[in-house]
Length: 321
Image (cartoon, rainbow, N blue to C red):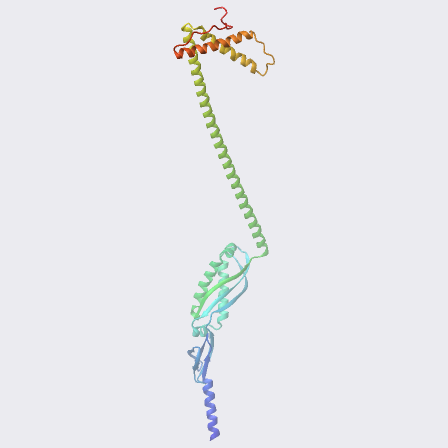
């Protein structure tokens, strides 16, 4: 009896040990009762009688990464490219992930690969190279909607690499080089254009300033000539008044002045080496003396009481008076 009891106790202990299910953190187990799903075991210790209940699937509830193998895709403009990517997903419903699809990983991989061909095949080569964010967003929307029935949430879909053929890469390099040279020529031509415009503006301002200077100089010259003419007219009037008053020294002064100016022009002429005076030096001195007497007479007239003029020498133009 003792042996039987010991055997029974051992059997009970073993049965209890087998019936206790310990679930690790980050996982959930599906529990089946005679092959039919009944419950989901959460992380920790769970008791389900052996023989009657068993663990069906061990489902990883953490976020997982699935590599999409490289594949060749024909774009909309018939360019052959090779691409690969990664998919980040997380199981939200362990029962659906275990029983709604036979192989969750293969299903997600095949679904992502098919939609990757569809999305990138509807775009040109330039769009596939420059619009990765748009490709990722479209793939995420399509794959996440398709896997919702499996209790899976697709968190991210990323394209890792896009490899065009070598000849297309070379053509793109030549195109980029030509585009850069074009931009350089455009910038250079714009710089030359701006330089010519600034130069023309400078010449315009210079010509305007020169014209204004010539205008101002002409105005000053005309004003000077006008004043000179006024002075000449005034001098002529004064001489005429003196002649009308019977003063012969005024006409003598006027003629002597012109005589001295003429002699000065002879002396400053670049073609003259020798000057011949047709008159005697004493006559010129007498003329200058007459000018001095005329000046003294004019000053004496202004002062009122002037002494009588002293005797003077005869000028060159007074011999026949």
